[in-house]
Length: 219
Ligand code: DX5
Ligand code: ZN
Image (cartoon, rainbow, N blue to C red; front, side, top):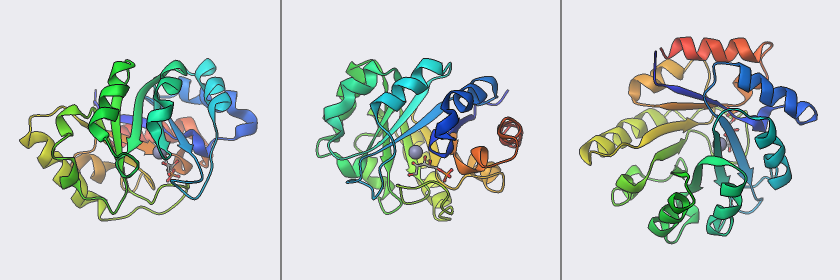
């Protein structure tokens, strides 16, 4: 059994059939539900807010992996803990006091994640990596689903893996954006532990089967 996790991004779900799509993920071989929160300020798009997350939480049977693409995420740490998040990722670029933010997330009983934009260098995580449970490496510019994968990500995975091993940290590497069956295996070979996939899963004819195929590729 592989330890690689697949986290379908509900951003690409059919919101008119949200319960059905959450239940599809429940019944599939996926590991987490990836939940994208956008505020229209940190990123040029607005996704969905607390009432929708509450609905997802009511139907979901797998851990909620929440990705905050918002300014001043400290304001909402407790809110997302109450909404049932297992992993809460904040953006490096949105935090003035990242170390404090990470401690606050853990104090609420969640795993602490840090997402980094394509332009943000891995070396900036050197002094916090031991406090980070998951790094969400953005392989597209955050804000929209369905964009194409940025190839420089492979190099960043390798640098991040070297940093994690060098510091004897236990941080998971998550890849978010443009993940498909074409790059999944190469991403895992480079060192990825969690693959987020939105459009590739939900826009396919048979999402359950697509998740199965992704899982098989990374075994
Ligand atoms: C992008 C989001 C992603 C997005 C991925 O800002 O963080 O999680 O939903 O979607 P795809 O897989 O379609 O690139
Ligand atoms: Zn995301």
